[in-house]
Length: 480
Image (cartoon, rainbow, N blue to C red; front, top):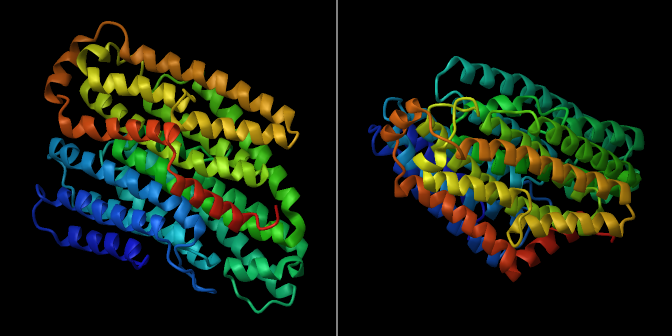
């Protein structure tokens, strides 16, 4: 199976969606392409193709460890998208469907990028392709969120481009030939100019950290996640942020090969802990349940950064967490989207008693909240436990204490908002709105399956996944 199909099929689907004449049948292209993409990615997970040395794009061990999770999330969001767009029939969906498929293709390219320039192009293209998705609702707040996403995200992409130039110059300054593949940069190792490597690391961490939504570069997230449709929030939280994290992992491997791995790990640890602290504080104060999910995403990006800072064991836990967080966040965003459409509001002051109006969505929202705060035996519990164990093994007792404290405060913040939304007596206006947006199988089944997969991931993690994560760690940390 050719891994380039993971890029070509979604982009071809996007072109077909742009030319498709019927607004009513066009959304079916989403699950059609999603099924093909998922079959290919899981086929390559089980039967990984050989990686050609020097290739700019390849389904290498890191792509194998992460991309199937993105593909699975997209498929279930695509299934959800058909009834969602049927409900939103008042708005044309040509650009929405085409953009969503383009994002999938570009994410596939970003995860398979083994060249610094190709990685930057793919991540910038993902940023641009996501813009029409953010202002799909057409409100003033949605346009404001879109501009903030563009300005902050564009700044991050500009910094990452400057960091790419610095890393390329570090290679040339050290006698390299200008080969910007990650394998060639790592092979040059100590020959890379250390000052330029450190400058590149700072710029690339800030640049791609902005795409991840690490604090303090997270300012675009609350508005974007709060105003975008639930399906878009799920893709952003579980897919777009993931490609930025894998970019940081690839760059960190080069920095480590240049002899500055300890510096990179310290910065990852500090920014990860800072993100968790900031997220916990905002979770204690927010009243908007979709912005709540944005701050939860900031927290979990911090968890990934902390895992990457703790060596191979921590990176293994971080890769595990990518899967658990993607599946769980998908369920949370989709169920939150159901609640928001049914209630006609987005804050605790406007929404309450949703357990009576949307019992299935409210139940999944509560369950997802417990899962994302590390309820055993779901996947995030074991991945976060792996990060804590890696911190103890590395002697980072203070970091582990802050990590656990932030989890506790985040739990308090999440439960405050979630139970405020689902409990109580529904508002009269919400009863009228809920009758116009009834719960159907199409909008209930995808988030329910996502929660089931998160449980399956924790209870019976497949051996092929553990082997794929171990292979990625061996690629990123060749010297244990």
